[in-house]
Length: 455
Image 1: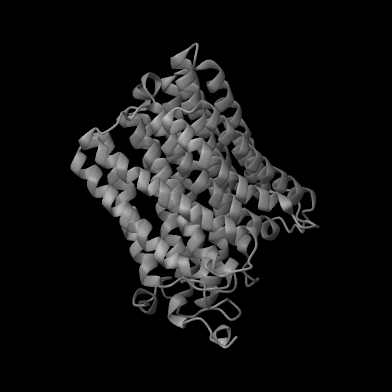
Image 2: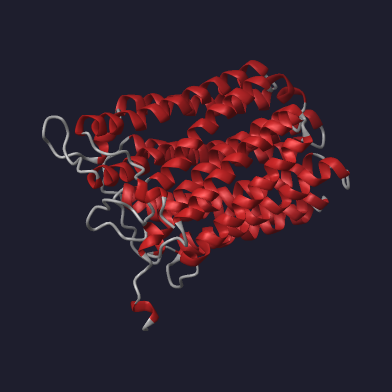
């Protein structure tokens, strides 16, 4: 009991001008915002890579050019955004600070290097660049695990924390698989065929990124939808246990070509994802907030999860008779599952980023708009541009899926262009108003000298 009475070390979340009432464990705003800003740039790079690789994508979705585009999406966009979200919400969920702000900043820099060097190396077929990027990514994962282990070790925090523990394990497995992948590009120890690459992708998509979203959403939905779901909410527990359990069978089944094992894993994974969708349905049913753009983002995201499952099932049924069509449908399924996570990330960013910036602005003495009325979360971005972003990212996912499924290169290129527009519009829309408010007030930048030197 005595140890519980000791407050968390203030250095863990050192933040000059921290607003009153904000938990001390939450890191400075520059920590999560760095990741989220980089995720927008990663989406721009992903779009550019899709345009560049459009011809390769309709011939062989496992070509290095397509792999490069996929890694810009998975590492520089989705993983970057999820890492930023976890740096912000893990201390909130667990009520325990991260180990160190310096570790957070080191994680950002090393992950940024790895997330860009790896796909650049794939695209240019420069093996030393791939190896360097892999080393940076592995170091970033190590730093992140060390940093987040302390708050996630707390007991009795429910399904979200349990799910995040599994998700971190999924990240480690994905990284280890990637290291073997990188090494094998020189050694050629085994055949990196499509099913091997798909086994790697299934871990990253579902046991890391998907499970992290499934876990955090159980805290975000009640807050953003103003929903209180009665009962014990068994669906949340089923989701966080069934998703990693399914991947634990699915990935080896794909890797070693054991069909019955892969089917068992896919079935259990489907149960977990179904429980996630059921939980969403219950939160929508019991919400007290009127339908808005955020709800549309969330529902559209869920639709792409269902589309991905349908494409994956169609691919399995067709690939034995029409191999190229089956492979194209598999690629489209991966794009649809990625779209599930991308649309969710973009939609929640329009809630999370204003939440972080609002607290940061208050810490700098900016609490009112130009007309003297109180500054609210919704005042920190243009809602018309947010609606445009919704259209851009949704159309982008649809175009990429169509292009891969039907082998239409121009559709892939259009999807890439829409992703570029999405990344630029999100970054501009979520930063323009806060910058203008800071400039008008003469307040200090969000990153203070104290934050930069925080342990």
